[in-house]
Length: 465
Image (cartoon, rainbow, N blue to C red; front, side):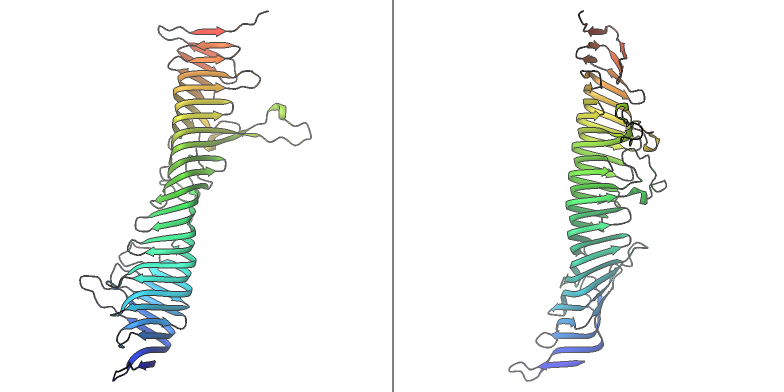
C-alpha cells in the first residue's frame, strides 16, 4: 500500500489524501444498518491495483477506482437481495460524505452477473448482461441501487430469453428492464424487435413500441394437454412460424397473451389478418381483431382451367391459388370450433362470389383434412341485410341475391336464402322470390319454397322470335 498525505494551509498535521493498493488488492465495504431499513449489500472490490481517494479531512472516501481490470461483488445481507458480480476493464465508484455510495461506473468488456435472491422461485436462472459501458445510481439514504444503465453493444441473457440493444436501463425496485435503440428479444418460441422494449420481470410482461415486428413458433412450444405443435390448424398452422407487425405490442403470461396495437398485421405464408388492434391467446387459440379488419385466407390451389392446359411436351401451367378476403369492423376467431365471426360492414370475396352483410360466420375445415382443390371453408352463414353477387364464367351478367340470411355449403356448392323476401335476379333472364330459395353456384338449378300464406314468384324474360 502506498499512502499519500497532504497538509492543508494553516494545519498543524497532515491528512491522508490517496491510497494505492497494489498486487491482489481488495477493498471491502460493510455498510452500517440503517434505522428501520434493510442493510444494503456488502461490497468487495478486487483488482491488481486500486486507487482510493479521500475527501478533505482524510476520513471519508471520495472515489475508489481500479487501475487494472477488476471484479466487484455485491454480497446480499437480506433474503430479498440479489448477489451481483461485476467485471470490467476499469471500475470506479463515487461516494457522498459519510461514505455513502452515490454512483458506480465501469468501462471496457463489462459483464454483470445477477444471481436470484434466496427468496426467489426454485430453479430461477441467473441474469447476465454485457456492454462496453455501465453506470449505476444509488440511494444515499438506503444504499440500495435505484437505477442501472448499460450502453454500447448491450446484451442480455436469462434462461432461454436473450436480448440485445444499443442501450438498456434497469429499475431494480420494480425489476423492469428497458431496451432502446434497435432492441431485440427472443427465446425458443418467439422473437420481437422494436425501437423500444420493456421487460417487466415482476409482472411477467413485455411491452414494445415503434416499428414492432415479432415472430412466434408454436411448434417449439408444448400446447396445454397435447404434444408440441398439436392443434386443428384452421386459421394459422402451429407447424409454421407466424409473423406480426404493429406500432405497439404487449405480451403477458409467459408470452401466451399477445396484444398488437396500431396498424397491426399477422400473417403466415399467404394467410393474414390486419386491423387496428389484434389480440391473440396462444393457449386458448383465439384471435380477436378490431377496427378496419382485413383477413385473407389462401385455399389450396385449384387445378388450372382446361383451356389453359399446356400442349403435349410443354411445361404444365401453374395452378391458381384461391383467396378468401373478408373485410369487417371486427373479427373473433376460436380454433376449438374453427369459427371466424365477423361483424360490422362485412364484405367477403371468394372466387367469383361476393357477399355483403351485417355479420358473417365462417366455419373452416381442419387444414390436414383439406384435399387438393377443396375449399378451406366448410360453411358460411351471413345475416342482416345479405346482398350476394355471383359472377360465373360464360353466363353473361352476374347473378344477384338478397335476403336476411344466406347459408353457403362448399361441399355441395349451394346457397340457401331465408328471411325477409329472398330474391334472386339475373339481368336478361328474370327474377325469383320465395320464402326460401336454394340455388347451386355455377349451375342453373334453383329450388323455390313458398311459406304459409306466401306464394313464390318467378319473372322470366322471354326472347321474341
